[in-house]
Length: 184
Image 1: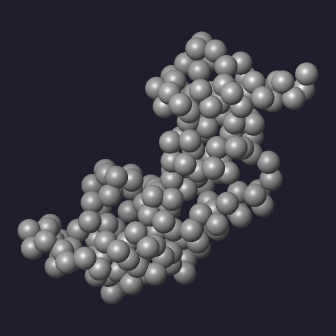
Image 2: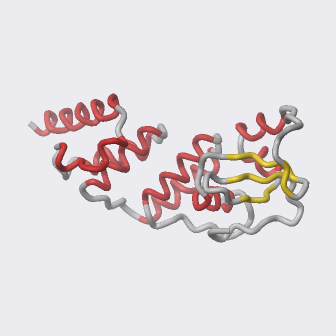
């Protein structure tokens, strides 16, 4: 496994990452932590689903590092929020997707306790695009503010431009205009 997550001895389900790493875990823990998983696991499962070591497999779209971090928050093992803000956004997006409010709250508290977020140039634009697509409102506001220190030009956006949905870029332009107008 990629990080600190330890397979529980009484696992009754496997979560498979997008890069095909299996995480043995407990349905009860998932159900208590997430209304999404509670609903999914309460439905009858098709008989043709994949089984590994006698355990049903659920394939998820998150990579192994994100899933590892997400699962670490659910078990009584030390969890360290990554220092890389883009990894933090990936974990927050996954916890948003699976409706894990407690996980989001813990991560946001840890990030807040670290002090101000420092992102420069294209990092801030990337953070805005990712948080916008995942509907992470607090992170969207923070990263929009951080973009004010950089010009909003095609040359400056560079490789980050494909991450933006059209309306997200429009909203960022409007936000920056409102900030400029309030200074004037």
